[in-house]
Length: 92
Image 1 (cartoon, helix red, strand yellow):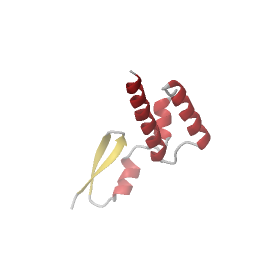
Image 2: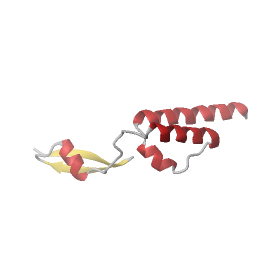
Image 3: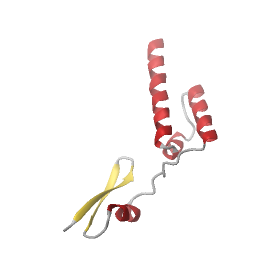
C-alpha cells in the first residue's frame, strides 16, 4: 500500500512524498522545510516590534520577524493591523 504525504516547504507550498513505510513525521523531517519552531520572539523583541509598528505602521525586517513569531504573536500583529486600518478608514 502506498501512502502520499504532503509536506510543507514554504508558506503556501508543499512537496508530495510517496512512500510505503514512512510516517508523516519521518517524511516531514527528511523532506520538509526548516520552518519556524513556533516558539516566538523574546518578549523584549516582540514588544519593541509592536512599539515600532504602532508608531510607524511598518516594521523593519518585518517578514523575517513575522516568521519567527509564535502563532499567538502573529495573531496579535494581525489584529493590530486590522484595527489600524479600521481607524484610518474612519478618519478619512
